[in-house]
Image (cartoon, rainbow, N blue to C red):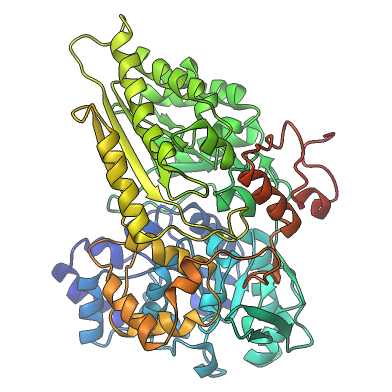
Length: 616
């Protein structure tokens, strides 16, 4: 009956293939022959969610087990949601088209802070109370994982279970526990207590938070015997042995990253002080060349994709990168498959890598200096020099490229006007270098694109203590940058919306009191906040005002080292002592060597029982 209702609406919406399922390699099971059903929800559009690697991995892993069935769910676009509400169609899963309120688990992967209102909207569209305390024993368990879970406190009122760290093992343990307790007819509350015994599982209702008079946190205390004082994240030790899909679901429509993806490593050795992913995904682990090549062949053959991307935080840091590319080329060249290499470091860019990129990136190359002067690059521990930036651009120009995109941040700690002017000066040096090269492409002009994001302080980074720069200050610095550029025909400048960045900062570093703000924002119509055409900053401001919540407290206040952070009871293996030490080094302009060169004693090696890279 529901299928007929859905089909009757498809011609009334944009991209109807988002809502009907049936794609190549999707998994359909007999629901009467499975013990646990899991609705895997991505709180954004189908086009974005179907590009996400983590969802592909966990979807295939769970469906590999006979008595588990994992189905996909995405946030319907505004046109489809309106029709669903008008026709009383609840949020449903793509494989069975069953309402997800009938499932055992509803799980969200949380990749970005500005999807929080979508989570509430999807729960409401499913016909479920959005707050955990209002749900009854017969309702699904709501779980969430992903990078934003390193500080899940703003969502503590809405989620039953948070999964910390990497999910391949802990997801299966959680579902196996549920299957056993379901057979014993145990209650939902009993399951939550038992789940808290699993390493990596955080049940926020099992903790009480008290606040000081100044609004900072006084204490976080367990209120359940199963709740641990500190919850440790889960990690996968051997990437060669852990499960990886042999096939992906292939969409009918074009998606954001429409290609096969092979993960080549996890973690990062670099230690850029602004980069949350570089710390929370530690330790650094690699796949062997043999594993990477085997997984590439399997995915391309099972999906028919003619492009494969090697995925990581820094693909060029793969120790076997040259060997891997040589082996992969034998297959990809023969089968006419494009090989994409994102996340390349400037200091690892070479003629060989440039030649490989030319096959698929015709328009230009992208580099991320992040800061305009060496002083500020040392503060953020970027560990690249101006000479390396110019060398990379020179290689690109000699290879026939005439367009380069450069990523920077405005509002970094200790940033001065000289650093802002340095961005313009660096662009001018690149332009001069291009025109001084007698071998440059004849008759073609160079084009430099400068993209500036506003720095957002994030948990588990050395800059978690820092405030975000004010709107007025960022606006002033943007104008200074524009005024400092002389070759205006050769340099384009763009920047992210500050009013998006400030909300990202508040939600990233916030505590449980933000739950009321998120709820009010959603109730007033906020959703798809990460999309410019839907973002309503004015409604968010009203939500803060209505709940008497001070935005400046979360965004523009510098935290002392001894302050209890909202996430301090969650252990991502990065010690606070290390973060303080790195913050002090940043203020002194001192750099830290990458992990291969010298162990920085971040705390990971102590947790995994030995040094990450042998002797240090």
